[in-house]
Image 1 (cartoon, rainbow, N blue to C red):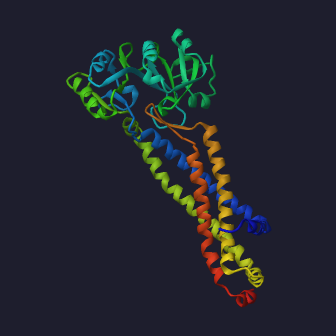
Image 2 (cartoon, rainbow, N blue to C red; image 1 turned 90 degrees about the vertical axis):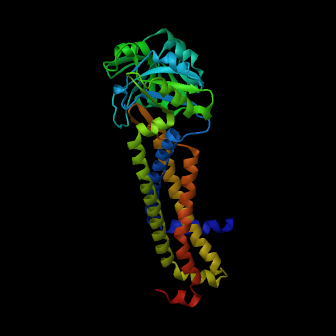
Image 3 (cartoon, rainbow, N blue to C red; image 1 turned 180 degrees about the horizontal axis):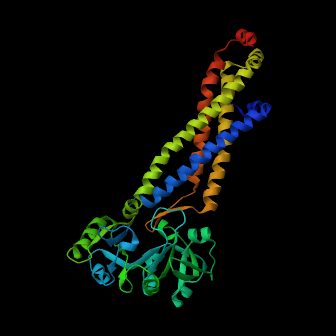
Length: 387
């Protein structure tokens, strides 16, 4: 854009009109705060619902059921599922939630057999134990392994007891997981949850089976084979890849997030208007100064680049402030959208930060192009005649 020696000139022009600059920066920061928050939400949806080449997880659910409270499958289905060719492991789960509708604060219990947690490496291989002990979870039937997001949002610590949906458990450990669905749940003993929960069918009844396949390319074939096993049973099943299951169960949330894309574009338009307005006013006030600069040997192209750099700096500073605030709120707020026992975590990442800064700088440059072009076309005489 411009040589480094001209940067103080650009900064001086912004500092000369402090009130205008501060108001513009505040407006840009607010707009970019909203834009980055929307981007973080969309990234969380993509992470939870977009299939990847290495995905190996299937969810076996009761056919034509959606809320966990209505999906009831016999636990003895487990042996038949494990015999299906291509199945590496299968874990029966009972799921209990305190709110099946869309909410920002849901506690989800996942009951799994004591032995399954130890054997299912596919379930625990992506876990990192932050505090507590898995051995303590194994010893105590009313204990829970709590996801990091849920623990941070509710302030849970190891040894603390809490109650939800009529189920009282004690935190045995807090885990961090690479899987979005593990971050906002509490893993408890299956038999304990079957007896403690008021709904769900009691002992011998589970909500779903989580199945891991040996070959990701055969997921559809394995899912079809599982459903064929129980097609004639009293409780038929529907088997889908986990991320497709999340996308369908959280369809309302996904649609809302898609709509927020328009909000994001609106925020960028607001940034463009704010920065352009500030640059236009600034250039209008400095018409005669530009004539003096031309007299001193500043070429019209250099003056135009100085104006464009001013817009870029306004956009970058305001964007950096808004982006940093948005990422801080997302990171420390531990927000998670949940529906029907499934979670979509609002994700803050360096990719979102880089996107926010790049777009704010780019919009700042775009906002300064027209004022720069007009200033660069003025001749010295017309500049001195301007009021």
